[in-house]
Image 1 (cartoon, rainbow, N blue to C red):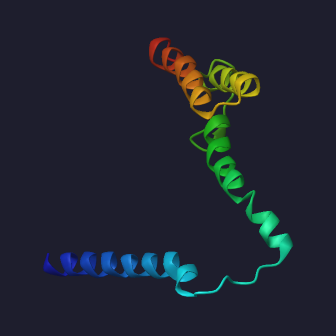
Image 2: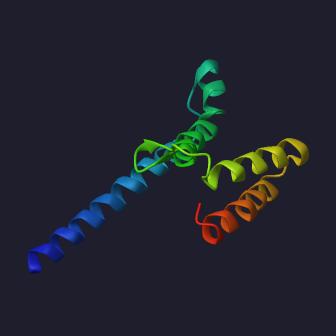
Length: 111
């Protein structure tokens, strides 16, 4: 049992060190690192691409398979959130509208 605790401590310390080094790597140098313009333009879209890669499978898949019915609470919530976003352009309102549509359908109707 003691080896398990030692392994957990070593793993936690190792992960903490790796996290600190990788996140502070760009702050170590006093001067700005040269970066090609194409890379700079591409990095502007990285957060959106990462968000899409996380959210899109959650919207259209369940247990690793595509949803097979239109009676899924995520679809009307997605439609409402998209309509709200394109009319108002507000992120918080988009999230709220999506959840206001999703929760009654999912919890109340069991979709």
